Length: 333
Image (spheres, rainbow, N blue to C red):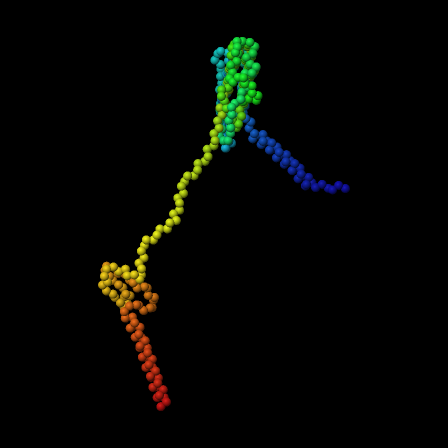
């Protein structure tokens, strides 16, 4: 016989499974919304491939990263121009800001391949980092398999060249400017540029472009990275006064009670109840200590007053004794 199933326990188990599923769903949603992908700038790719067209595009990026606070900002300005080769193109410019760094730029790839087309694209990136980071020289891979198909040599004018680094910071103008045409029809440069490990930026532009014969490809990329050490907080330079432990000496002169401080000549001494006050000169100083209440004051004549009561007492006692003796004799008689 199977034991009966407790419905309360079964319901608790079902509620636990539902709660677990809800928590997992919430965590997955939070993870999806909190992750912010680094923006990728992508423009002017695969355009203007009809003969005689021109494409001209620019990207300017300013990345700022504070490693001490974790705050990152970026400002990106893009300019996109299209028109006929050799004429003033029509351009639009847009500036955007983000709270993450721009780390990838892709533009002007597979474009301007119609006969006699022109491709002119530029990238400028500035990285400013505060904190513990390093800088290095940007690596380059450019102008490989380009400028082929005839024409007056040299058909390429690239700097640096040769540049065949795999996975380089800048990859541009490869397999471009082919199909014949004028001299130096591929002109691509990467002037002295620096990178930082804190913001690894890659640039990929003007590859597979300007291949319609008689085309001109002119592209450049520049990176500037700087690292600043954080400024330490200022030290507290407030001077704390030292505690003065020196106790000032008491310069008050306390006169010696047994010392005669009377100035000048002594003119007279008053005895008796005056307490022996000595007067001399212009100053009078008492040299008598305090006498307890009920005591006899010191001074001349004090001894005679003390003996008089005693004498009277003895006299009275003698008289009383004589009177008693006379009374007894009369009784006996």
